[in-house]
Amino acid sequence: MKARLQSDVKEAMKAKEREKVTTLRAILAEIQEAQLQKRGDELTDEEYLTILNRMVNQRRESIDQFKKAERDDLVEKEEEQLQYILPYLPAQLTEEEVIAIIDAAIAELGVEGMSGMGKLMSAIRPQLLGRADMSAVSGIVKARLAG
Image 1 (spheres, rainbow, N blue to C red):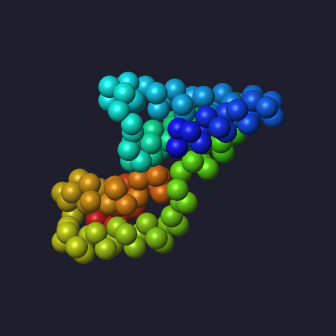
Image 2 (cartoon, rainbow, N blue to C red):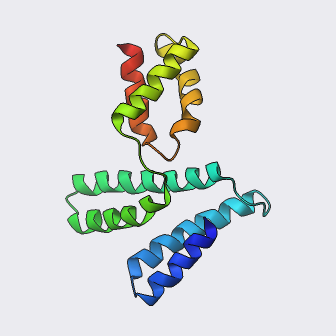
């Protein structure tokens, strides 16, 4: 992942894609910070996905806030950055696929009611990390457990 990002930064620099270079360098900085936290050890795939997911969530939250503030220029910038980050994540699951995973986990764990939400989220997180928006997943889980 890190080598692919570094290669993509070089290509973006040659193509003079300033915003893409900035975004990819931000990803690399986050990766480097995470490696420092691990005392230089290589990151696992799950750790890479966690970093990318956090960056995607930050962009989505910023987009929502900028839309509320009617700052279309900043919305456009954040959406552009989001489009540069998404290709590094695995293919996103459809809502139906997410619901199927949630329902299977509910049946397997025998979870009933909101008290089992934490247990359920812990069970499905590894399957969905990087492949679905976890805040949306949380909403679906709440609806399934309440309903």
